[in-house]
Length: 330
Image (tube, rainbow, N blue to C red):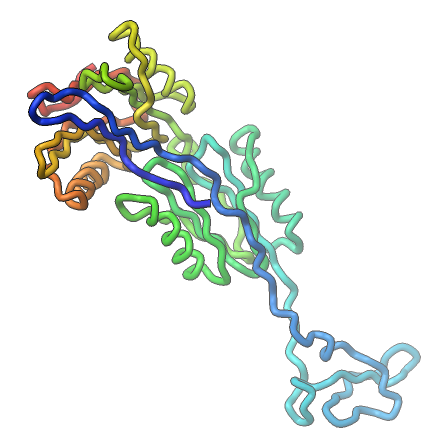
């Protein structure tokens, strides 16, 4: 299932600045289902040994005595005489990746003899660090997994026969729903060792959310709540601040994100419409670049109005109608 990514916006007419609202929701979804990568087992039967009391025949090779001293043979490569002994068939190796909804990283194990062994060990490794709540994200047999992180902290997974192919797959999926290119978190192969996040504190998601008045009562103010341990807590804090500011109105969440920054900006269209917007990204620099990229794509004039670090606790009110363009105020 593809994830849809966009910015939130409020549109105002230049002549009257009568508020109206165009709100684009960020959709959340789980990554696509893991598909096993199966080894090529074509014609393995020709490599099995069998009794040959009269010795090897055409296209066969002797491999020594079997039970009771009976000579044993097997076919040569492709069953062709003189083509040499059949190649050794290497055993399959499995890896698995686990994750946790409150972390933007992953745990993985490899070199396991079965899918179930890899899955159990990966989830156990994750639970050991997080205290529980981990789930299986993906697994491969003789393959590789690549993971990429989107602007809002969501993680995408790609699976293929090699690291390079898995990276291409995951970036194609993640970038299709992003303003700026996604970041590769890492890759993990079926023969790789155990892998866990280097810094659990930084990997832990801290959430921020922004809310504004819904409908015709919109007064060009944005309420931003940051530094919360869950999406629900961040959204509720933003909604509460918004509704306290103006009783008898209904407020709605404009955006939420895990870690990173929320960039607020204006986009003025060619017809004079002014749009109040915001967009999440991994850093303040990338957030500003994302806003500018949106404006370029829409051929609108862009005015950056500050950014919020969602990892820093706070409750802010941003007034899009203010002439000030400095740091957001509390």
